[in-house]
Image (cartoon, rainbow over all chains, first blue to last red):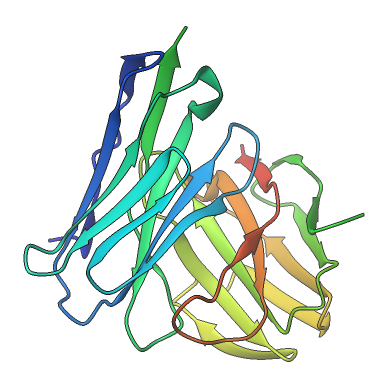
Length: 110
Length: 115
């Protein structure tokens, strides 16, 4: 079993839709949760960071962590074609090393 | 130049060649990383340096040899690679080696093809 599971997609939705991206994990020691966005021909960049359980909102983006279910989500409201990218979840415990999901490719159709 | 830069952006090499990938960070960070990214697979951490000292070597084959001459530069020397080594190689840096909100900043990567 992989430590972090993430559906690679692609996930294709029409512009303006609400997008839900998810990761599940097996290690209950994880307490730091991140979402990175990677555009084509670019490196990943940090989009959202959450510590422990709860929600965090930043503009059209909401990150949600449910530690009891070992499940994290990223919601994108009013999705735009410019949101088309690969979204990678990453998490860590007390160690500096990030454990990554495989990434979900998101396509927003105009 | 700003952020993290990598050269070359694309590299095609034969199995008997020797080549090097270069990474430079302009952020004043103390930690640098090499990752391998293959299609539909999680990022694989290869090497980690903190203050120019190697602190992680995740069972990487010896045909990959890292070098960190100073805190701003990181190299990955390649020799006698295999076709399965074809991937995107990403360099990243962070302020320090720490857990928590320790954001890693990535370069654009080198797309490596081994023939």
